[in-house]
Every structure is written in C-alpha cells, then in structure tokens.
Length: 127
Image 1: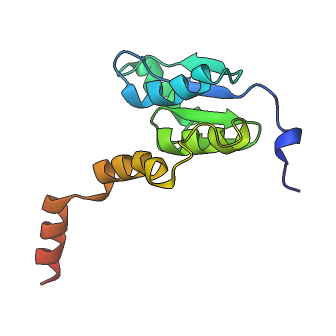
Image 2: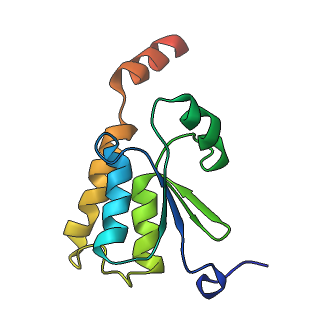
C-alpha cells in the first residue's frame, strides 16, 4: 500500500554536508528554510571517515544532500527541491512563469548531462 502525503511523518530529515563547502546541500536547505518547512537536519562532516561510514545509510549514491520523508528517499538537490515544491509549497517554490521555471532544470542538467571528452572516447571505442 502506498503512502499519501498526509500519512507521512510531519518532520522530514535533510542530510547535508557543510553548508559553506557543499553548495548542493545548501540549495535544498535554503529552499526548506526560506519557506519555513519544518525539517530535521543531519550534518555529516565531508571527507571524513565518519561521512564514509554513515552516508550509505541515507543515500544510495553516497552523496549529500538527501531527504527522507517517511518512506520516501530522495537524493539530488534539484529532485529534493521539486519534491518540496509539490509536497509542502503548493508550487510556490518555483516561478509562476513557465520559461523562468525551466531555468533551474536547465542549469542543473547542463552541469551533468554533457561530457564531451567521455562522449568522444565512447564513439572512438565503438569504431
């Protein structure tokens, strides 16, 4: 049986790194804080044995940020922001204008979706 948002715990857990050095963590944290979404915060010290030992309990990709909302597990700051926008903000987390709303996705995707050196290497290996 799937859970509805009303059946989920009221206080989600946001797992982050250092807000000064982990801007991806800061993005999710800021959205929740600016819109007064109640949440618990778990800060794992980056680049430490503690981080390596604990992060696997919270995020399958072993990176921060991650959000736990009941049985829902989300990792990636953009995915967390999109979830928060729908779950708690009734759409107020993104601009009302469609073109303006596309900017966060475009910027986030452009940082990870293109990898020219790897793409060229893959094409050359295929012959």
